[in-house]
Image (tube, rainbow, N blue to C red):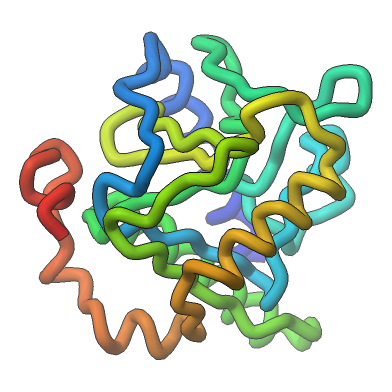
Amino acid sequence: MIGMMKRIALRQLFASRMFRRRFSVKATYSSCPATLLHYSPHQKLGLYNEKEADNRPDDIYNDRVSLKDGLVLPSISQNSSTSNGAAMYPNTCMLQELFRQHYDDNLDREDDGQEVDTPYIYSIPKGTPIPSHLILTNEWVSHFSLQPARGMPIRALNGVLEEFYSKHAQQETADAWFDKYPYHLANDDHIDAKWMSE
C-alpha cells in the first residue's frame, strides 16, 4: 500500500513539474549531447498508451505516450504531461531521485509477493548519432525525450527504440548501476555545462 501511495504522489509531483516547466523545448539534438540514461522496469523497452495507465500499475509514468489517430506524434505541447517518447536523463539529482523511486516501487511490489521483472538502466554514450526517424529533445531542465520524427504506431516506435538501444546502449541491471553511480556523485540538474561534459 505504501508503494502505491508513493507512486501516486510521484506521478502528481512529476505532472505538476511538467505543467510548470514545459513553456518550450530547450533544444533539439542530432546526437546525444551527454551520456543519457533510460530506466526500464522490464528487460525490453515498453512505451504504452496513456489511456491504459490505470491497467498498467507496474509500468512507470515516464513510459506513457499519447496517441492521435493511432499514431505517436512528436510532441512539444506546453500542456501535456506525456513526453511522447523514451524519457532520458544525464546522471543528475533528478535522475537519481526518479530512478531510485522506480526501483524502490519495484522492490515494494516484490516484498508484497508480486512477481516482478528485473529493472534495467540503458546508457547511451555522449556523441551517439540520433537516426533521422527519431528526434531527441531536451524538454526542460535535464529531461530529454527520444521521440518519433513523424507519426508512428506505438508498436513500431517500441521496435525502433529497441533497435536503437540494442545498437548503442550499455544495458545494466538497476541495482548494479546504482552500486556504480551513488547518489552523492550526481550532477546538479541546473548546471548544464557540468552534466553535458560527461
